[in-house]
Image (tube, rainbow, N blue to C red):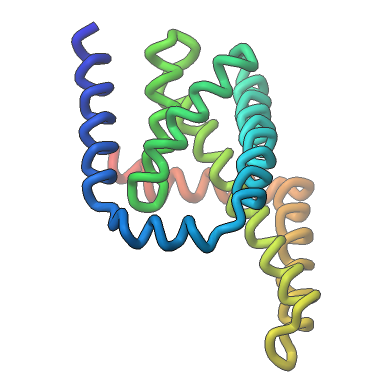
Length: 183
């Protein structure tokens, strides 16, 4: 119980530190120039977006035969998202694995793998969107060709790994070269 209070206190300290670092006069100037309707729309759109991401993470856990209720998955996702925002590289999002272990849902390793898969899905989607942006916006000559090439690679390479058994070979090779020597 004391451990939870320490984590909550640490969260409040980090939040207080962030609030102290804000230039409130500049913040007031920005808010004066901001259209409040767009901020409200962004917040309202972000809630279902986060719900969908927590549902995807819940699905990844279900693949591992670990069940978690929708509300609990959403709240754990939001907790870890806060830590992810205040840590470099969003590493704080891996706290979801710790939360899952504390709740008795899974082990740290299974939780960690589900969070890693979730982050890889995010990176994959960002890459696809970046390639689509290059195709549609063509910020320089030849950007469309580069975008289509990247988009094709993003679709073809995972398919090759999934359907040819190369994924097992790659994982085995990585295990032998990277992990086995460390163990």
